[in-house]
Image (cartoon, rainbow, N blue to C red):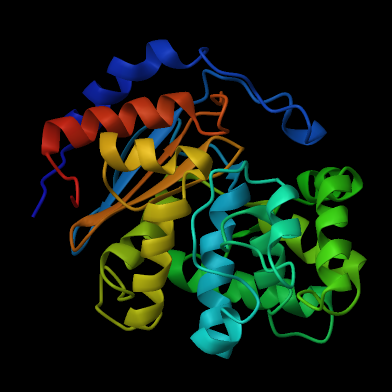
Length: 309
């Protein structure tokens, strides 16, 4: 069991605070362009223990691409492996998360994995519901169960901002619709997807969700089954191979835990059978990952020797 203390978190966050301004705040989602790089926080939720946190741990941020893990879990629960992976593949790619290029070399335009935007859109398209509202409700029900918090919802301003500027994601959807990977109304799919990305929480809530995956799908407090063990395993595998965009290989060497990042500056990490960790720092490197988040996790992995490799 890896022991992480309040002092550890506080000391390590102070150690990496100097990197808070080393990246760039994203501006292609207008509603996120005003995030302040000094807004940083971290939380650790141990299996069978109490959450510890430091920094701006109550600050609410949108999880963005971290949601891709949660929609994948939901699609697997609702439809099973065979159906999900008939629409999206399981392989990493060196291309950026928003790339169109790889769709043109696959037949029939099957996305390489569920963590790139094309694959995530294909997965979101599978969520059950008669309309966008019901699909979003299905996802929120799962997230509220994993976080043990019924207050979690999406930020309507961020969702609308993303929807209004989703030109590339529209292109991905229409390309996949032409080849039968995506079905139904594209605008409805984008409505769900942008609300999914705009789901907001703080680092303590995100760390609790990560702890469920660390505990192989069980509630970290009660041991109740929240998601099937095989679903947790598949999701963690994708976090290792594809979770940090096209920086996943470097992250696996330098940190070595399953993790998923989002362009808001969030990172969710999983320490198997020990606990879940969440870091937030909105300044991003050129790959789209939080600079402070990466530095913090590198420091923690070095100190605790927690690489799964």
